[in-house]
Image (cartoon, rainbow, N blue to C red; front, side):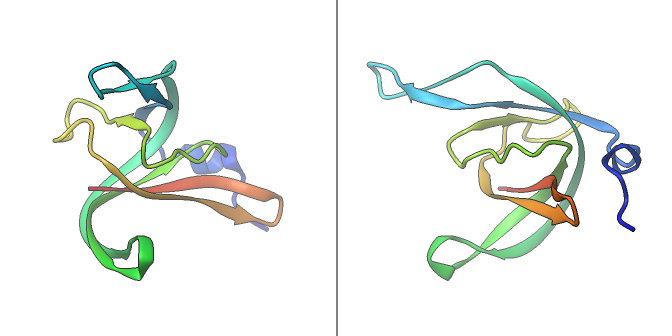
Length: 110
């Protein structure tokens, strides 16, 4: 039997916010929607991941998000103040499934 999301969240000591990308303003700068906070586990460890087009890219860390909502690469993610940078780029994000469907989301950051 899989680990329930409530048990899994015990391993998520951090809080991360995600602001969904909405548009660009008149100056070409991105604008974002309302920030949503999620329980998370931030692991800063460099690793190589397959980027778009199958090209390997270096990720600085991985975040386990306690949600079923998958952020896009255009969204803005904010980590706790103890992490540098606090707003790294999202390189990739995907849902992780268990026997009941989406369990949590993994996000790779640059």
